[in-house]
Structure formats: C-alpha cells, structure tokens
Image (tube, rainbow, N blue to C red; front, side, top):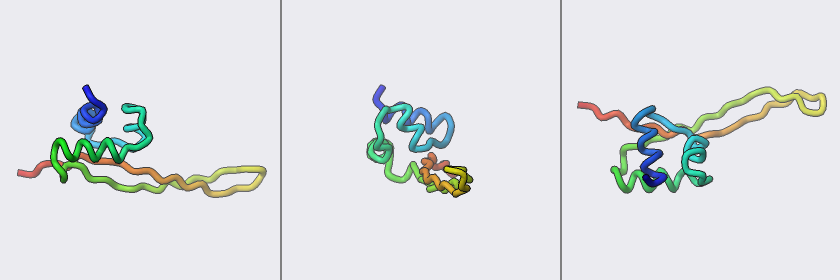
Length: 81
C-alpha cells in the first residue's frame, strides 16, 4: 500500500487529516505532494482544506507572549445525491 493509499484510507475512515497526520503516516514533510497525488488518482475536487490559526499564551523569560501556530486540515468532500 502506497503512502497516498494510506492517507486516502484515513480520509475515508475519519473524514479529515492534518498536515501533521500526513507526516506521521508517510514520514514526508511535504503533505501537499501526497494530497496532489491523491487528487490525481481519485479526482481533482474530492479534497478541500481549511487553514487554522491557534493562539496560546506562553511565558518565556518571565514575560507573557502569544504564540500562534498555523496548520492545515484536509477534508474529504461529502458526495451529495
């Protein structure tokens, strides 16, 4: 089973996956290339994505600052009809 097939199976089972999830499954740090291969194999419009921002407070050297994390989550489109 190829990396793309493993990610495809995960999408079918759970409906979504993050870039970090793709990295955990495939070992690659280029999740967009895995998604590109899946889109080529199964159809161009089956996967959408949403970019998320997550902000939390961090205390560093006695000062409170905000740390913002960006991550992308890929979703399998639901077929209507």
